[in-house]
Image (cartoon, rainbow, N blue to C red; front, side, top):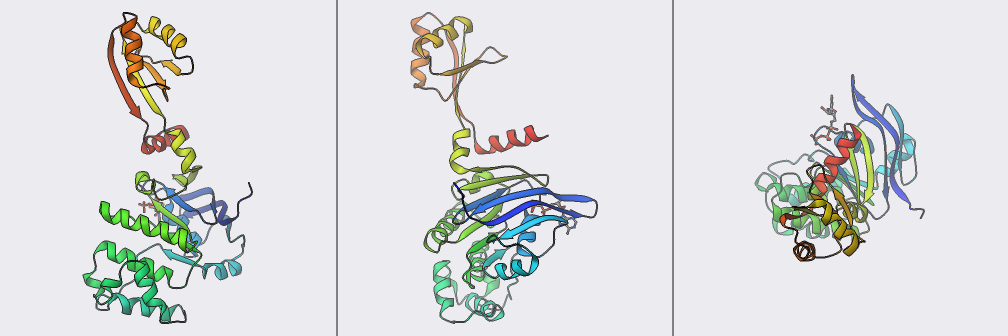
Length: 306
Ligand SMILES: Nc1ncnc2c1ncn2[C@@H]1O[C@H](COP(=O)(O)OP(=O)(O)OP(=O)(O)O)[C@@H](O)[C@H]1O
């Protein structure tokens, strides 16, 4: 399938002095997707997002927005992009509504009526008369999002938007991202150092580690990779594996160095495996069910790349 990428980088490199922050980074963000850029602290996420936003420039490689490249074209395309890379400056004494109006005028966006629509869309309408200094972190994130949305962008680029929010704040923001994506057809690129935070938000993930993209993967494929495991320790592993081959031939079994037997994505319920042993006079010492988490997947990926 030939998907249209609204954001693409090709072998982008960026150094700060002798520090290579991005090393040949290529990412592909399809129109209509929510793309999660995952990486530890210092992996290079902000650097990549700043390059896309035009705050800094690459040493080599190519950046494409809406398929267009070259600084002049990119500048034009960036007008259709809303970004929050560092918190936009808020004047503490201004109200949320005044702050949004300030940015509307600064960005040259016509139509005062947009203010009401965006304050309602981002869920801070009730707080419109509150001064910025009194807003909570979550409310500030929403106001930042409102500012990014004022120019009706087709793309949103958000650096760690979930950082520091409590669980209910995360859920609210996640729902908002889904609404913006579904109802306004906005493509969203957002970063986080916590994979599980983006697990239910993004449909595509890019794993960035020490300035390099290790993998780009759809959330569907990622979930498939996170297998279920059954780990069984028995008194007689040899006889038990023979039994498994006969009675559960479709299962993929592996005898681990500690002589326990690992079944990946077992076809039957755990009781089947304990009954099978019992019926043949084999004693089960332990039986554990495990699901490889997304975090484990990322840790393994980083391990392989060393
Ligand atoms: N202006 C700068 N001058 C020098 N080094 C920098 C600068 N900005 C970033 N770096 C370094 O580049 C590397 C990548 O930093 P970057 O901020 O892009 O990472 P990050 O993945 O966004 O990290 P975090 O999750 O901590 O925000 C880090 O080693 C950082 O110290």
